[in-house]
Length: 290
Image 1 (tube, one colour):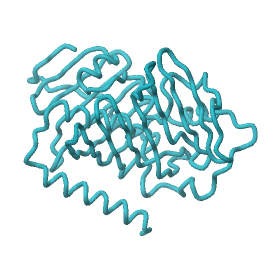
Image 2 (cartoon, helix red, strand yellow):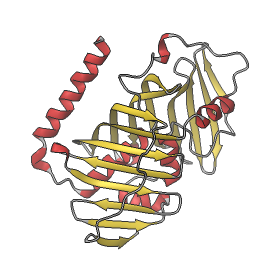
Image 3 (cartoon, one colour):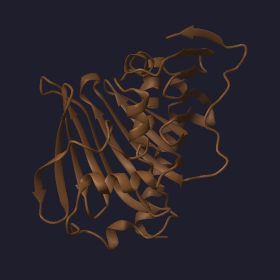
Image 4 (cartoon, helix red, strand yellow):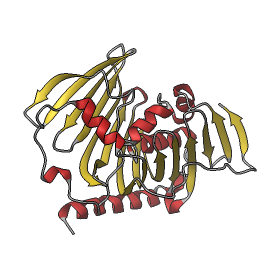
């Protein structure tokens, strides 16, 4: 076992111990739980975490910018390699100075169907989300209530506490940039290993840092019209799975809601077969419209 795997193992043990010691705070307040859910939605699968048993890490052999590199072409090629994703791991969240831990299992088919389950200590399910471009079910297991409606930015923010639509979330899960791959221009170049790109889209400015060592985006930042950062996501510890470069550690900041998330995946499967991407809410659950 490598030193890196030992370190990851210790981190996982620490998260498990923390979860057990915080069992007395369950059930969570719904908003804190929702924020945890979004954390896993955005990062997990949310740039699809790599596993400790995947092939050789990309950082060992790569690092220099290829000749005639074009960001759009690189992102499009990677996107075409991903048909589906499945990942599971640990999630730590801090909201207004309060820390919580949870576990997640998530599956995504293309950008169309998302299924995510969040569990607390002793593998107790606390929330489940099923979403398509047209409809979403959000099941709060603690209150046995299903919230149903269009997967708009407003509705996700109502239930999850953050301004992201289904399409935004699906793109993050696939390790892609929301809004497609076009429109970016080079802002700066750091040696021959990283490039920073910028794009003006609607009322926001988006910046990405592309690492030629990781063969993927390692940072995404969205800034509002006022100049305030809306979301900043950083990814690290890249491996290859099914010839796709994927990170298995990530850190996300939402300054406006004073929330931070860190995710560490323990397993990932790129292009899995026979996975479920939706769920049927319990018949006895209360229904609420979004």
